[in-house]
Length: 293
Image (cartoon, rainbow, N blue to C red; front, side, top):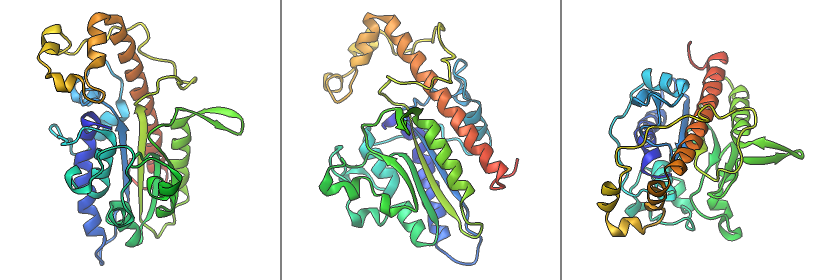
């Protein structure tokens, strides 16, 4: 996760912090919390943001019915650091997660919004990419903290879309959606919940796709970004070009425009597939009476 996906997450994490503080008090009915976020979804890859090509009706509906943050920024544009910031509401210079190896300490995680809410009586669940710490045996309990949640289907940074379940290939987001709905259906009526769903789309590896979801952008020409020009590329500082996951794709796209089209068709398709899951989960919320139609 980097600056692009942080657009939604940064605003929501502030809201979560506010809800968490209010939920720890007594006397009021405590709200249920469902936090969904993407992995590398660009800020303009959303119909509600003005993109006339991408098809995201379910996320658009959520945006239209909610507070939509038009400007949001991240100080440390890399997945592990951003996710740690979301969990505990601190800048990277404070929490110290600067690479994919180091997990949050047990003491730090105890101050995360899932831990605080669980301590306050919430049923908590985490589904999807966790990616704060490498799951080496000696730190696996911190890097994949399954025992800190009531419901867990988390996975590390390196994880594929193809999942083998009972000998059959399953698309990862299908599995996550099923588990999300199961979490909602099994939640006790008298207990508030906080469910975090960290989708993998549209992050790679792009080597397996939902066989039941044909790419709706196949053969389509995706408008190029305004900054996808040789002049704009030359103005990018040298140290950024050679940084982790810098501008290598941009250079390749300038040399071969069709590679840009192929990448964007894949990314748009994955985002639309994620949008389908968002719709299925929100429909389950309505069906189960958690939200009104």
